[in-house]
Each structure stands twice: as C-alpha cells, then as structure tokens.
Length: 302
Length: 302
Image (cartoon, rainbow over all chains, first blue to last red; front, side):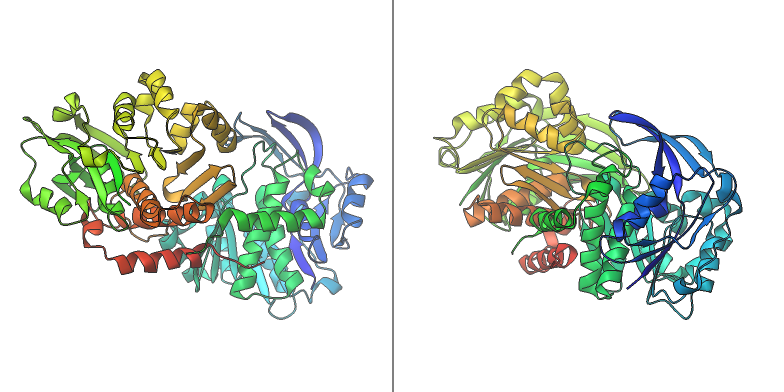
C-alpha cells in the first residue's frame, strides 16, 4: 500500500566528533522515504531548488520512492547546518536557510490522492493540513510530526491540523510543551483531546513510547557503542514505523507494536554513520536481524 | 534462600509537591529489605540510634526480615532531608546527619555468615568490603550500589571492593563518572575490567538496563500518572531484583531478566506514595499483577 509523505528534502552541513560534511542530502522527508521504502512504495511530496543534484535524485529513484510530487523551483534547496557535542547529546543549529522551501505550496499529483497511509513530516501546520485536504476521502492512517517552533508560533494552526490526524509522533520536550504537562501519561490525555488517538513519543537514547486506548508500549533505543550522527534518527524512526504499517496494511495493536520496533530499528541504523550513509547501504536482511535483536533486548518470561 | 543486606536505616524528612513529612523511616537498607522480603528471607545489617522507634522496628520484624544484625548505638539515627522539584525530576539535599552511622563497623551475626546472596547498599566501600570478608566462602551472588561521593573520594577503596562483586547496580551519571565513558556500552566494558560481570544501570523515569556477557536487556519504568515521591525507588528496585533472585535461587539469564522486571515493579510501587507507605500496604498479588502489566508494556511478536 502506497505511503504518502510531505516534508523537507534538503542539503545538510554536519559536524560531529566523528567527522564533518559540507553538503549532504538530508531533510525529514528524505530520511523518512528512504527508511519507509524498505517496507512499501512511497509517494514523496517536497520541493527542491535547481542545485538539486542528479545523483541525489537517483538515490530516491532507485528505491521504491515515487518522486512525481517532488517539485522543482528556481533557487536553492533548503539548507541546514548543525554541530553535535562530544557525546552527541547536544546540538547547535549553525544555519537554517529556507530558500525554495519558503514558498512551498504542496500539490499532490492525481495518483497520490488516493493514498491510504499519510505522513506529515515537520513543516508548517497549515501546509500539513493542505496536504490532508488534497487526499480523497479519509486515509486509513494519518500521522504527523511537529516541533517547538510551530507549537509556539502557529499554535492555532497546529491545533486545527491535529484534529485531522490519528497519530502524533514527537519528542519528549515537544510533548510537554504542547500539552503543558510534564508527566507523559497526563500529556497523552491532553493530546487525545486535541484529535490524535495515538501518541508516539520519541525519546532519543531512551527509545520510544506509544500511548493509545490499549495502554502504553515502550521500546528501548538499540544500544550502540559508537553512534556517529543523530541527524534524521527521528525521521527514520517515523519512516520505519509508517512504512511497516503501510506495507502490512494493518493498524492493529500487534502491528503498531511491530511498527514501534521497526521504527527503532531504522532509527538505530540511521545514527550508525554520517547522514544517510548507513540507510543507503542497508539491506532488508539486516533490518530483520536487528528486529530479532530487539526481541533479545526486551523479551522476558514471567 | 536468605539474602544479606548491609546499608543505612535512617529517618528522612521529605518534601515534594504532594506533601511533606518531618521524620519517616527510610534508608537504603530499609527500602531494600522491605522490597526483598516479598520474595525471600532478608538478613539486615545496619545501625540505629536510641531514637529508633519501636513501631519502626515492628515494621521490619513483622516482615521476613531478620534484625539480629541491626546494631543499637547511643546517639541518633542517620538523618536525611530532601526536597523534590515540581516534576520530581530534581532533588535538593537539605540535610545529611550521619549520627551513629559515622562510626558504623558492620558485624555479621554468626548465622548471617553463610549467606549466599549479598547486597551491599550505598555505604563506604571499605565497609562494603568488610561485610564481604565476614561472609564464609564465596557467595553465589554479590551485588553492590555506590554513589558519586565514593567514586570521587574513595576511588581506590571502591576499586578494591569492585573486584569482589558480581553485579554493580548504579545510575547513569554514576556509571559515566566511574568509567569515564559517556556511552553506556563502552562504560560497561570498562566496569567489567574492574571486577563485576554484570552492570545494572538505573535510569529513573527511563527504566533500567542490564549489560552482561549475554548482551543487553532493557526494561522501561512503569508509566505512572502521578508519582508522589522518588525516595527509595532505586533501593526498592535493588530489593526486588535481589529478592527475586535469592527467592528463585537462580542467576540464569532468564532469572536475571525476571529480576529486572521485579526490580522495576517494586521501584514503581515505591514512588506511588510518600516514603515507605506504598510498600508497606503492598500485597504479593499486586506485585504479580504489575509484573504481568510489564509484559503488556514491552512484549511484541515479530
């Protein structure tokens, strides 16, 4: 089942104690699409400038990612530069240049409009809503990300968009800021009143937590001895999560639990190397092996 | 199988947004013993002053806690006062009065000396070692806690004690400080060189992680909507963990995983109410029910 994603395709400059790159393919929708394409066909909606490199287009094309919805505009691609601290637990943004993204108005190709699984990566909430409106009927599953910037500056728009999604997938601090509750269970209750019926909290090195009507499900982060670059970990998580569900065509509790595991698997691979590198060399068999490793990491018998 | 514990029996003054108590029974060995006594017979080694209340002695006596090793000295009990922040995630120590604890020299009653399961709660590492020396032969399992204070001020003594234990059970920041490694897997490798073959990292609201030759096992913290008081959570975790193993007379991988779960169960109950209150009203059936709830929280099928 095809999975629609809207978000950023960007160039990143990254610095971590493990290296430095001046300009590498990045952006939430890129990480999401590459991760999700291991499980299902992805329909990408994004915008790039005329500096978008044919080699980077080929990276997307040779996977099961449909780029008919990748708009070309004159100008430069969205650009982000960031530096990570020694332990990768802190990040400084050095530059954010919206470029062609500043005037992005997502338009869905006709064939995308029947998508049943939709992911709205972190962009302005009114654009997220525009995308949902272009989808015919109600998707089987609509999920979204957001960030503190929109919680603070576009709260009304964000609240309006939240009414139309099933799953909100954000980090701890965003969860607390949006709900005005420190405790994540109480935060989930507040968020359920806003629209979503499922909250997925991404907690970085502590893993992820899902709260819905069935209760709570937790999955740890995969322990890595030497993570290299956290960029795109959350988007890769989202890609693994939504990709699995769309591929399995299920939103049962058991499928959602597996989606949490596959999200964590993809997130863990993403941080192993710089930028997209590890996801680009990844094989399906490695995903399955790591998913089994997640069982070993968490399973017990009473 | 009897479980030996040495540590503090104290009076605590506690303040949190949920209330305030001026003087309540506390101390690491108290929380540990009460938690462990749900699973096995506990032999307690500690010291109290002449202000130790008969009602508090009765609390220990009416459980399967042997207090022959509870020394009486003239003076006052160890006293600790602390205040928690609004979200319980920060703690200020308002007072630490060692009192009779300052001259504590643990002496094991003869019948304690054949203990096969030993827990050295957070006290000076030379005292921890003295206790181990009084145990006849090699225990089947010796575990210990410690804290930043000893890592910084008694590092040599601590290193000597570490050579003689199987399990080190500490929190994230202590793990990082002791090993001089931020990454917990690399930290575990450093700690294995010091003696222990198993590292259990207590991560508060993020749960706990065990690293040993079998690999890594993670258990989340039980999600609670309204925790009241984190005092004693780590010691209750240790009590549940060691109590389960001593009761089951096993140190197999499967038993250690269950011990992690029972540790988390006891830790989660400890924080539900002020001080020891919840552990004192707890029933064995509630422990089993919550352990099953931990399955629901973590289990998935690929």
